[in-house]
Amino acid sequence: MSAPAVISLRGVEKSFGDLRVLRGVDLDVPRGTIFALLGSNGAGKTTLVRILSTLLRADAGAAAVAGREVASDPAGVREEISLTGQFAAVDEVLTGRENLALVARLRHLRNPGAVADALLGRFSLTDAGARAAGTYSGGMRRRLDIAMSLVGDPRVIFLDEPTTGLDPEARREVWDTVRSLADGGTTVLLTTQYLDEAERLADRIAILHEGRILVEGTLDELKALLPPARVEYVEKQPSLEDVFLALTGPSTTSGSGS
Image 1 (cartoon, helix red, strand yellow):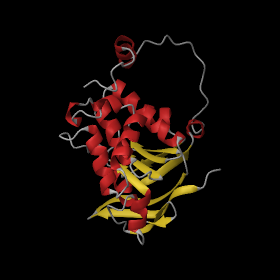
Image 2 (cartoon, helix red, strand yellow):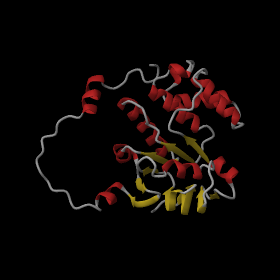
Image 3 (cartoon, one colour):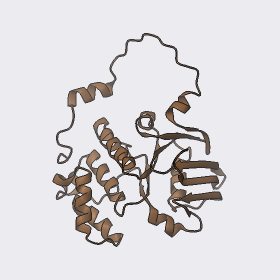
């Protein structure tokens, strides 16, 4: 890999009682990339993210983020990262701008209002910034949640199944947002069950199954593990998502709709 690893794991294990969730995970995530971690429910994706974000201690092995050891320097790791969970963690009573300014104050940044305004503009939420977050659509709420994660310019962001429960249009909004993060130099570790999401976004992909990494590489490298495709003529019928998006068209109210 040409880019140095900003996230590194060696032999990471974690058990809950008799249940072995992680069974020796080795992984390197290159700087400035989107790295997708795929796995079914119970594969250990969220447990791995919780360890990397210092919310949970590993039973064995070593993990480092941005050159800082997770076990011995958790405070240093937290200075470098941000975590967005499966459900948006916005305060629905506060406005979008107030949510962002609150996080800026908690991070002890100067001029929280200016920080909030800059992020509202970056995520196309300026027109909705004065409205209560509870009036936002699912896609807007998730974009605000990701914007809150970027307060303080973290070098690494963990996105734990960020499109769970979103409609197709909102998912695409989030995809565009995630892609822009990596384009701006942020390293993104994305956990997802949606294979199309990984295909659309990821620079590299790892498959976690029963606590172990089965395979890791680019999409083309993973596809090369199977026999070459056989070319046949198949009449493709439109999917329900194709129909939905064709009928609804691009959203013209993503910045101000509810």
